[in-house]
Amino acid sequence: MHSPSYRISTPEVAHETLDGESVIVNLESGFYYSLRNVAAVIWLWLEQSCGTTQMITTLAEHYQLTEDTIVTDFSPFIRKLTQEKLITEIAESSGAMPDTSLLPPTYLRPVLEKFGDMQQLLLLDPIHEVAEEGWPHLPAN
Image (cartoon, rainbow, N blue to C red; front, side):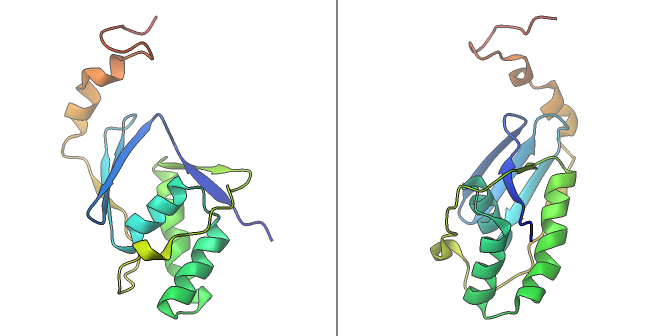
């Protein structure tokens, strides 16, 4: 059975996780996102290239739920991250095992919160004009 793995879509996606919340910005679309609780931990596991099968098994064992229950919540969440172009499927995972010490005590279905109220500002931000050499080099047309 094929178990896809994913990577965060860098450099188009910037993100930071603090105090159990991941804040993600899609620099191409101008939308930003919030992930809390289990969703934030899944994001950290994606950053480590943990395989989806490993994540599902780990969540099921940790929260003493069936894998079917986890898949029912997990699959639409991963699909949404992919649709928003926040993650990209890769050929194989790093083999990293998910760190259960990051998991909150109570299981909450992973949810992607999407915000567009700063979209115009994010798209106007001059950071989009920064080349690898840094500011203020403009990209060649």
